Amino acid sequence: MLVTGAAKRLGRAIALAAAENGADVAITFRESAREARVVVVELAEHGVEALAVRCDVTDEKSVREMVKEVARELGGIDVLVNNAANYETVEFEKITVARWDAIFASNTRGPFLVSREALPYLRKRRGRIVNMGSLGGLRPWATHAHYCSSKAAVHMLTKVMAKALAPEIAVNAVAPGMIELGEKSAAAFMRKMAKQTPMQRNGTAADIAAAVIFFAAAPQFITGQVLAVDGGLGL
Ligand SMILES: NC(=O)c1ccc[n+]([C@@H]2O[C@H](COP(=O)([O-])OP(=O)(O)OC[C@H]3O[C@@H](n4cnc5c(N)ncnc54)[C@H](OP(=O)(O)O)[C@@H]3O)[C@@H](O)[C@H]2O)c1
Image 1: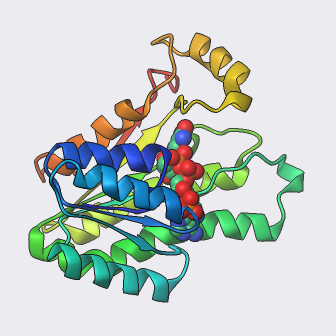
Image 2: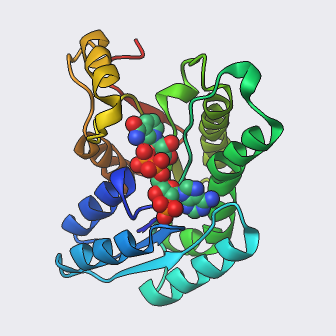
């Protein structure tokens, strides 16, 4: 399995869940080199092959070299998880062209580029792609126009790729809702969101990792789906 942006947080949880299930795992990082090294050690403790490769998912050359290295080291790629992304809160009228383009470059162009470069390897293995979408790609959040639009595009990209890459590759997306990752600055907001959520709590990294692992191992007949993992918040 190849998981982009997995030195920390959800990507790390997904990578570790895959290793617990016996998968060899490659992670990518951009700035979090130190954290990535720690994750590689944690992955290897599960007795699987593990490596970390630096990659900027917005950059074609960087993506091409990373995918080649991962395929060489792991002997192929059977599951790609497009996890690397950026999130920011900006009032609508304050979103600059630069911010808009930067969010789309990492969140939308990134998954497209990594998927395109990994295609030959995924085809060979009759593999799977899991894109990380967002509840914000399904529901409009007023102070996240660029982020929400970029994730809605990822959901559509998921469906287009599912059709374009069948029958060899299954493509699905996981759309997390409010996930508790221990950020102190967000504590009051997260408490409020838990109260509004039918399941009366926020999600955990384990909830998201379980959904990704489901798609990674699911029958190939399941394709083109966007699964909200949000405790019912989007209902
Ligand atoms: N956390 C949530 O509550 C939540 C909710 C809805 C959806 N999601 C989605 O779930 C996924 C994981 O969420 P998260 O909160 O764990 O993500 P995150 O911490 O915001 O980002 C994950 C990693 O993406 C990498 N990244 C950013 N830009 C990059 C670029 N241009 N090239 C390569 N790597 C880049 C960063 O790597 P470095 O640190 O190495 O630079 C970062 O550590 C994301 O797709 C996110 O949009 C999360």
